[in-house]
Length: 508
Image: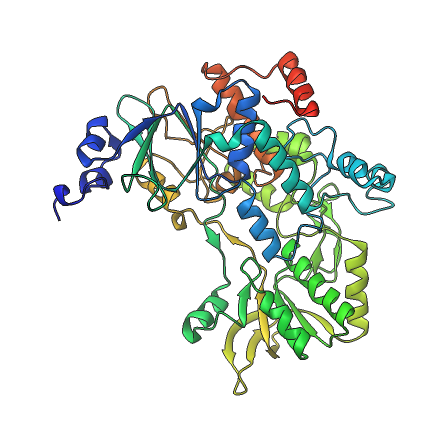
């Protein structure tokens, strides 16, 4: 089909050219709009970036957030709900990690203590984790405070709905970000945003399934009994309320612990007789680590850690170590201090103890070789263990709690950036970035392309996929943009003045 037959859309010339000229978009009939700074994603990473820029004095007219989401917390809310963290439950985050408050003061503990008129929360923070569990905020508190800050910085004026197709470098400097607006909302199928700076905060490409479970789902077209913890699976819990059943849970991280707690809570609340088989690929029997100063507690299969990374990774000795190390040494340190962990919470520990004693919670170490349907329509998991033994476990459902997909080629924008934008992978297979979070190899004249969040794991800063990590990246990016003259520097005077505005709820 000729170019003339494809108005307002990508042409073979545009698709095959890495460096776009303005005239190429005009020839294709794609309208071009100018905005100095574009953030792609529209989740909490984009929100935090725009929050910092607004605090640094950038007007809303100079920022555009491109997203399919209606709110910056939409995707995160969906994932937390699906993985058994409803709004009233507490998330895995520190009291001072506030995506709505770059200063972290007052903390979420102070906020909830004031809101609930409960000094117990302040006491919890004071004596954690020796006498109590670590404090962490409710998911609902995060939603509400981000909404308040989004209103304060006029986030909605910067949001443009649509699906980002690609980001290409522009001849002469800067970038074109190609957007597909929702059907019927624009006169053309595609719109291009021409900007000097682009920020990518696209999160994870999608769900990650264990190979044997993916094979089962595709072979038997069964997406009902074999589910991922990050996809809607409320039918599992509802089915178990109607009749006794057995569930296989696979995974050893925070999501696995939340799914287990939901199953155990339902068992207790409704008097159910659910049997739980929990399969660990690696079964942790006690404290472990590479040395006396690099050890974490563990036991009963789990590796315990209050947060995804130790607190020193956010601003202490681990952060400094990551900046010094490179390549394999950095990757080894990331594996040592990160990995699959979960907080050690008192109530959940007691539930597991009761389950082991009552012979209805069965933790095992096993590698699943295959899953197949049983003659009665149930599921059979065939396993092997380190001692050479084989097992056969029959269940009604299998819940995969192993995580989210992080392979860049699975994301259209990132895949195009690797092919046409000059981007490179780091040792962890994610985007390689410099210390200011500029994506290595993507510079375009006086323009710069930055990235934050899960897409840049494995670089100089370990905890990128966290509230504090996204704030750290946003502050470093803003400092680089201030050096380039795009925004004001966030010095002590501006920071204090803006904090006063935040406390009193005054617009930026």
